[in-house]
Image (cartoon, rainbow, N blue to C red; front, side):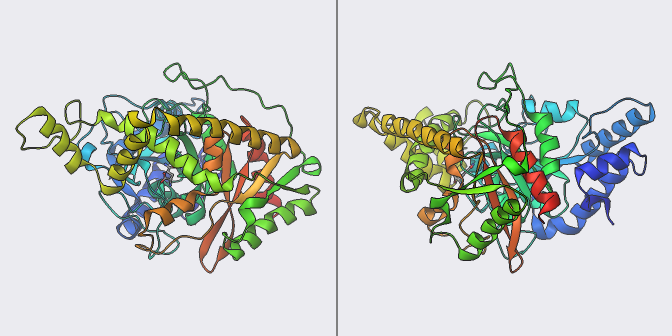
Amino acid sequence: MELSSLTAKKLSQMLRAKECSATEILESVLQQISKREKHVGAYITITEEIARKQAKSVDEKFKKGEKLSDLAGIPIAVKDIICTEGILTTAASKILKNFIPPYNATVVERLLENDMVITGKANLDEFAMGSTCEFSQFKLTRNPRDLERVPGGSSGGPAAAVAADEAILALGSDTGGSIRVPAAFCGVVGLKPTYGAVSRYGVLALASSLDQVGPMGKTVEDVHMLFDVIAGEDSKDMTTFKNKKYEKEFDIKKLRIGIYKELFSERINPEIVTSVMNVAKSLESHGATLKTVSIPHVEYLMPLYHIVMTIEAASNLGRYDGIKYGYKAKDFESVEEMYCRTREEGFGTEVKRRIILGTFLSSAQFGGAYRQKALFFRQKLAEAYAKALKECDILLSPTSATPAFKLGETVDPIEMYTTDLCTVGANLASIPAISIPCGLIGNLPIGAQLIGPEYSEHFLFAVGEFYESNCK
Ligand code: GLN
């Protein structure tokens, strides 16, 4: 058994029992990278030498008998939209192709404080805009379960790295589904935390009111361990909160599962519906109760998401102007031409599409009408989720309507946008949601999504861990 194929939990135990060293774990992962990376393409940058130094220092600390964090010595891939001091951070965009941040994102600081070993920066759709990872301006990432298929997006690199054993854990980011969709497509676990549970400081922004960084791993237990490392208040991000307590204790006999009716409709691949219903049934056989719950706003989810997200994205991406950092066009005769050419040459098609849409929707001619209506409706949606989550403890749905697409299959942007139908609701309502593998169609993984109320991450982990150990 290769060390790279084990879970973080298992490796952590082995490290403590002195059955392996951090260096051996890292070398096993690097070996796997050298075997698989040419086919999978999970990373934009591999930080082999830095990782070797980190692993060595962990081994020395263990030797000295220091008490280390549970995840000390565990190799982790970081999505390339999260700033790493001294290490290229590109957002998979030409506009940042030479950007080396002078500081670490808070989440990266926390990985380092916990002595984790960073293996590199993983690929994504440019600025996290996409559902397939095909909008990266640098490289193609393939799904390790089927190399002719996409890994999902935008955190396709992190998901593929974990699925291919090219990392033990990964950090992704999720604005509308970008952790959960690739987790489902690649057969790994991924959590989108409650808005404010994890610091966004040093994370390049797509849509500030929706973005959250979250953990990805092979099991719920691993994702749980990583969440505990990255979550918590950060004085550099005032939207974070002190670990708020969610009172409910998990008891399978008392668990009320809400079957999210609108997300089991004819839009969803029937085999996915069956697999996700099987999750419900097996939890039911252990004592949980099932209840059909309706949140009848499904028709509005995608338009609402695209209004909120593009308006925020257009504003956030205004900073890439060729002056402060990143790419600058070569030939220009005026400042205005410099801005235009820099952005024309630096951004890819999907990013431009969203900047144009967001600028249009927030333009003065509408007097803020689109945004205001969207915010009003977003509030209603959050209330609908809160109400549904009083009738039950968790909502269950598929993570995605389909399994992984073939490479090049989703040419129509509108069609691609519907990939997030099952996931955007949790971002808009600021609540946590986790995707857990729950079956296969042929060799293609299927994800089940569990959604909980604000701050209920540990409750979701408890349900997921119960499912993993008793129902699979
Ligand atoms: N696929 C969605 C989009 O294209 C979600 C992106 C994300 O979560 N970063 O916007």
